Length: 421
Image (cartoon, rainbow, N blue to C red; front, side, top):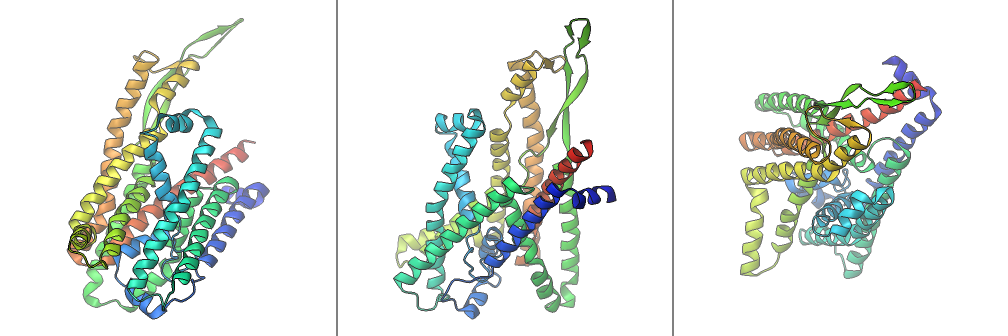
């Protein structure tokens, strides 16, 4: 352990990567504390208090929504654009071919389309958010010009975060977008702990202890599922070259139970935010039909069990969806066949792809179910104990644990590479 820490500080390249990540996160936190002009802070704090919808939206903004900062939208528009682009690959074969078969150039072009789509998504979300806050009198006497200027500011802030996230992914360590969300969650821990301690009532101590025990269980469960693998035995055919024989060794192909990591949680939350935002926007329109639609959509936020059910289904489906996009059994089978490897008892080619696909579906079923149950566990506790902060805390905990595990793995891979050299 200490030897690896010494390597981090002694190796110039690795140290620069970690310091670069920290520097970008500091810039992000500075931006999250610069508010847009014309905000009534007293009304804002009273409006945000106990509002679960804005608590979840605040996760994606990295804490920028709590004071209506210039980065209040966070990376939510980019996540929404990414989801739309991933869904379009199932409709348009050319997009799917570009993403899967275009190599690195194809993926870069695909990501560029996602960035372009982020701009209109940011405009729509920015306008909806400011319109809602204006109706709640949080924005002090905003004119049309004030709305226009502030929308431009927050769209630019969202695109700035996307750029910073990609800089982290390219020049630093870890997934930049996930680390920005992680930084916002961690930054809110001191203020949240202080608020809980000062408002702690003796009658609520058992509830907080129960939540703490559930948090430990969630952390342990996420770690176990994230690290769990299903090995598929692989053998290499013997080859004679000249007077020597090569191959004939046996190894295994590790399949992670949860191939998608934290992405299904982020995707599911971003989808769940839309009905609530639309309901809040339609709530101010004096029309019977519109009011009925707004009331129907508000069920997502008012009924904890309906919200939890949709949350579970979305996490489950997105786990399968993202796994299908990122892991192609046919490509794995083709690579094995080209390298002279095979699964014992299974013919190379299509039968191997079918075999790997069946195993992947079975283990993903377990991983998706477990991830969905862990995701809605805090929501169930909230419904039972009536503490809105538990739902937000559970979701944030899932994201934090997964991002930390992913980042630690990347740091360890860098250390192993340098130890090998």
